[in-house]
Length: 212
Image (cartoon, rainbow, N blue to C red):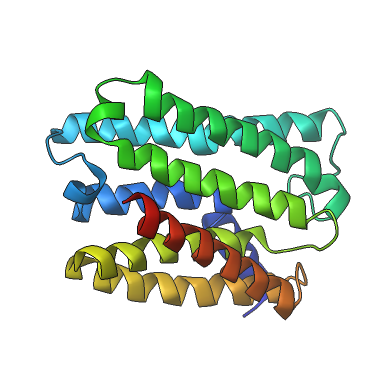
């Protein structure tokens, strides 16, 4: 894998965008499991767009302004010190999104509480990554893809949702590509990659076990 491909994979599968990919997959293949089976296609599209705006666009804009103000030296925030404030901003945005979809947007909060549960799971993962990053540069990319893998695998095992089997296989392949990309770019060492993957899988799988 060359550096250009590694960079593209790191951008396409950025931790913040993985949330949108996950919801798009669940809306399309297993709408019952996330409480959106009663929604028509236009409503699903609007809901996914709202999730995209809250979980990707909003934190991306904040990180961009951090760069413009000189708070961070690059949009990648490669150093552990520079990552702390962007992590905190993302945690606040995701916590607000969890509250919004769980308690403020009705009837979504009543019909599809699973959405806020998944958002809460991502928020907890971000909190753990931010805390660990104070003394160790854990991989947020591996945490993100690990979280998606944990959600999909947990749903498959808990509800025998075999339609998710192929997406899980694809997610495993993507996880391998993304982790290889981060190693290729010297962004992390193998221990930091595996630590992030374990963190994401653990939090998301426990979320499915206790809250679904």
